[in-house]
Amino acid sequence: MKLTIAALLLTALALPARAEDPSDKQFQKWVADLGSEEFAVREAAHKELLKLGSGRRPSLEQAIAGATDAEVLMRLRDVLSRCGRPAWRTDLEGALETAKRENRPILILSTAGDLDGYS
Amino acid sequence: MRTVTFANTELADHLNANFVLVWFNHAPQFLEGQAPEGQSQPAYTPEEIAAYPEGGGGGNIRAFYCRPDGVIAHATQGWWGPATLRAEADRALGFLRATDPDDARTEARARLLADADRLETADPAERERPLRDAPNRRRAAALRLLAQSYTEGKALLGQPVAPVLDRIVEENADNGEIS
Image 1 (cartoon, helix red, strand yellow):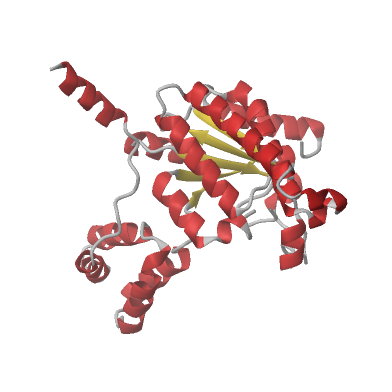
Image 2: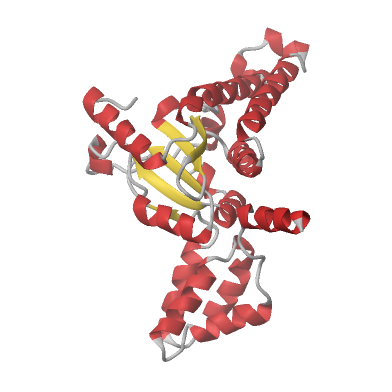
């Protein structure tokens, strides 16, 4: 019983890393969902694709080459432009809330200048 | 740092996978965060980048590694290349997961200093060369700066990060300079 409680506590305290790279099937589904008639589905798929690492650049480039829908293309290009770049947030309060909700550590880089400014 | 260290996609992937990332401008009055009109961020040559010492910049660049509840678990200062920052991020994750984070941090600092000692004597021939031509001695200097920033950051550990950032902004505004 004590061992189970200890194990449960350790699991709860564990800091989750991002999920591993998704399968091709899952990737294709998210790309397809970018063209869904439901906004919520398009947004959710966009959000998932933004989590992809730079290893998925070729898949994204391929998807862009095959896309015919304007919104799908726009969203894919947005994902590609952000792929392999740090997902910096500038809203400290929002980021702290996200970190707490997702139980993820935070790295804050404090420097002189804005993200897209002179720094 | 934005155009060099964080242009490294491997580092970006690693940081994205393990942290919520925040870019905080602690000197919003400095050029209003923007480049002067007509100017843009200078593009440094590979030679200039290679020559810029790791650990440079001091308090102008600070990294705060925080728990999910926003409490500071580790803090460093200075500019770091992709490999050093990657290693530091991994060390910070280790501190966050350690049963005794203070202990873990103390040990890590001691290892940095031991590595610096080892590098300084790795190649006796470097003693006859200027520092810019002595990669082991330069690396040793960088590790000593990193270890020093552990000491300087210790006072901030355990504090919520938001008020600490507010104080940094106030200090910069009061001093009228980037400190």
